[in-house]
Length: 192
Image (cartoon, rainbow, N blue to C red):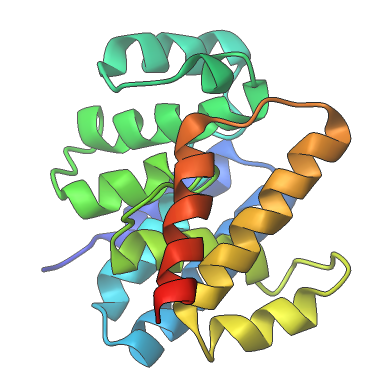
């Protein structure tokens, strides 16, 4: 399948800050590398990674409008956490505005912030590509980068633990799908 990335890059460059645009390019590149490593479609992974933050810098009102129009199941914890809105809005945006029909791409954008149980390989790649992209500098990022390239399931569990700890530290809300994702990957590791 052909993905028109040039048009999308032009749109992102015009609608995102320079820092967010560079981040989007970095995530796309990371997703492509991970797709090659784990036998997924590298162009599809690049495309999904490129678009994961397409609505990140829209106004809160615009993000809320897209969420309301989407018809997607969105839990209360997500609705009460503004930093999560862009993922739901972005998934609906690429579907409704750009006509993306591939549910794997839509879900990769939709769940790249919160994770969930039973993620597809592409969803995992976008979730982790966002976490370890070249512009990320958090403590232990190098350890996480190594893990992502050695054990995808363990990396997903570690990523979800990192996310949950971060949210708890800030006093935020944890969506049920994140907890379900943590339990899912914990069982996968335990039962391996």
